[in-house]
Structure formats: C-alpha cells, structure tokens
Length: 206
Image (cartoon, rainbow, N blue to C red; front, side):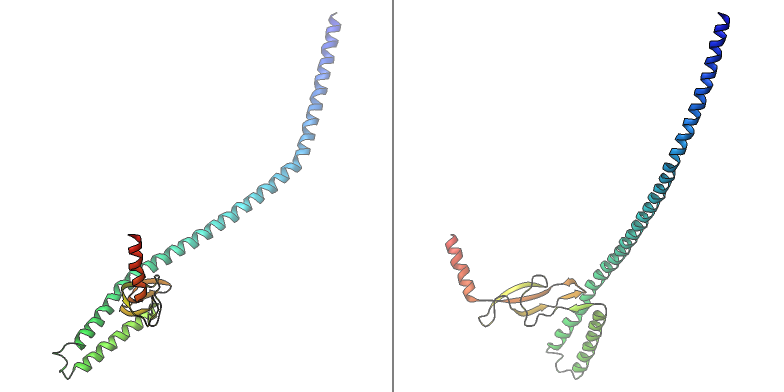
C-alpha cells in the first residue's frame, strides 16, 4: 500500500510538471498572438498623438487670431473715441468762422478776409487729416433720409420735394471706415397732404 501511495504521488508530480509546461506554452502562444495587437495599439497611440498635436496647433492658431482681433478691436475702439472727440475741434472752428463772418463789427475790418482765409486753411488741413485716418463726412446733398446715417431734427412741409428728402443739414455727420462715428443732423421734407391725413386719422381714432 505504501508503494502504491508513492507511485500515485510520483504520477501526480509528473502530471503537475506536464500541466505547468502546457501552461507556459499556452502563455507563450498568447504573448505571440498579442504582440501584433500591441504593435497595432502603438500605431494607434501614435495616430492619437498626431491628432492631439494637430488639434493643439489648431487651437493655438485660433487663440492667435482671437488675440489679434481683440487688439484690433481695442485699437479701433480707442481710435473711435479719439476721432469722435476730435470732431468737436472742427465743429468749434466752423462755428467760429461763421460767427466772425456774420459779425457786423468785424465786417469793416480790412483784415477780415485774410483772417477768414487762414481759418479756412486750418479747416481744410484738419479735414485732410481726418480723411487720411478714414474719417469721412456723410453726404446729405440731394439724399433721402437714412436712419442708419441721419438723425431727423425737424420736418418741413415742401410740396416740391418727396417725403423724407433732406432739405437742410444742421450738423455734419461722419463715418470712421464703415462705422458710424456721428449721424448727420438734418431737416427732412414732409407733404402737406400727409399732415392732413394724420389729422383725419386722429379724428377717426377718436
């Protein structure tokens, strides 16, 4: 019986060693079968890294463009405020020129024309500087009222003009590039018939 136990024990050891060899062989086969997958995974990782790099570069480019736009907007905003305030200089110069020209006491002054000529030169130089910096006067002559460019200060009955036609410019308007710097203050034409229709409409409403 002791010899049978020893034989059984010996057989168990042999079977255990055989199973270990089969397991080792199986693991080697698994490793061999997985190696191509690992190589493919490495390629995928490289591709993912390339994609991330491209996305990062694209984001950096977008940030650069946004930064440039912010700088441009800030510069234009500063230029806009400066240009708007500078219009007051031209306004005051033109008012002074008109006041001097209509002053009865100065009309007899022999140097009046020369003085007005000097003011006109300064006025033209200032307008030239404005134009070089994309500040241009809004044209109102023979124009129809445009709420995007003009501000109506009054309506004048005029049967010879179409309703909404600009009759008078009260204050000049200006553009800074494509942006409205200041609307032109104007008086616009209005038909008498339109006024009567308004009265009739009010009576009907009552």
